[in-house]
Length: 83
Length: 105
Image (cartoon, rainbow over all chains, first blue to last red; front, side, top):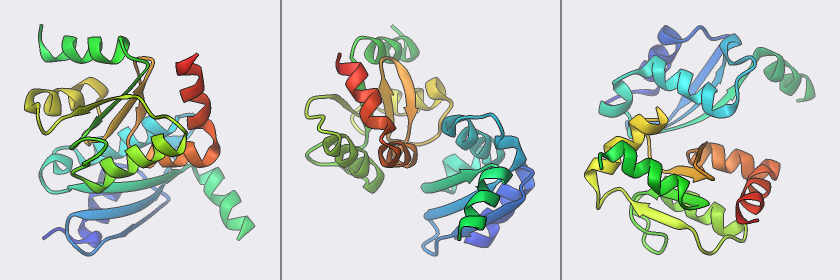
């Protein structure tokens, strides 16, 4: 069964990230929060596609549902400043 | 007509198309159900919903078409808008409502 930790490793391995957080303990449904400089200048669809590319075939085989929130480092910093 | 052409025809000849698992009345997956609820929340009652469970070729073909590995997928005026996540975020920003109104105009 796929763990959140393993999935976090897949994402961080395939995509340079400043911050990755993954939750989900049923092995099928996961929620990920990903901060990467590669998201700069990209719209949401393109950002998510980058993550899907990093996961490659695993998206078809192992992961049934991955819900994502993607941020550029700048947006992420602003959000954290507001907290 | 191969699957990619069929999909292109479907998304370009209908203003709003949702590829989902199941039907609006009987969604077969949580994310597909969420997508339908979001469209209803935008006040959209009639839209084309295509059940990919009933059409395996489209179920795979749509992933290639949009370079997006999951279902549901929403198309407005032939453009891939996103899956359930992005629909939710766009809805919260009020953007989805705008896109849908433009599509109905």
